[in-house]
Length: 205
Image (tube, rainbow, N blue to C red; front, side):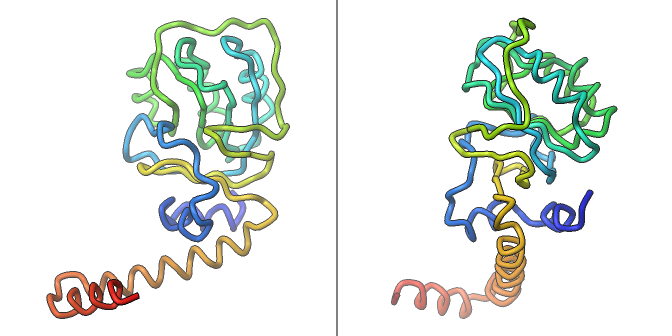
């Protein structure tokens, strides 16, 4: 994992979202299968039509260790883009997470893998393999533009996209905000007078 990605993994998505003014968050319906799932990695993008997941298999084969496979499945919630067997292959080959604007299946098996999967939910029906779809192109996932190589960060609150062109600036601002949030928490929480002063300051703006 490259050093900048490694730094993002310890920053909450809420903090990153705030410094980007909430402009690069995926739809809140895209959630982790387990709340404790957390990841950061560079996007390997996949664009598929509804009900065809062959391009997902191609992405898994082409992925570098640490990549996050980000899939534009058009928000379809009837046909799953993958089950536990496919997700298990991705995990074994070093993929760090899968994020899909769509659904997965074999949810209990995937949870046993303890591998970060973020989706709109689960379904029963499988996808076909007609072979339509593309990888490593600009896509929209959860209403947000994603380009190959963008940094994707996910945790219990959701998924944020960090444009590659601004990643250094966003990292610096996120780390600064995180430090300020920690100082505020330390100085204010549990202190009645400090809480009242903070609220007065906020309400007087």
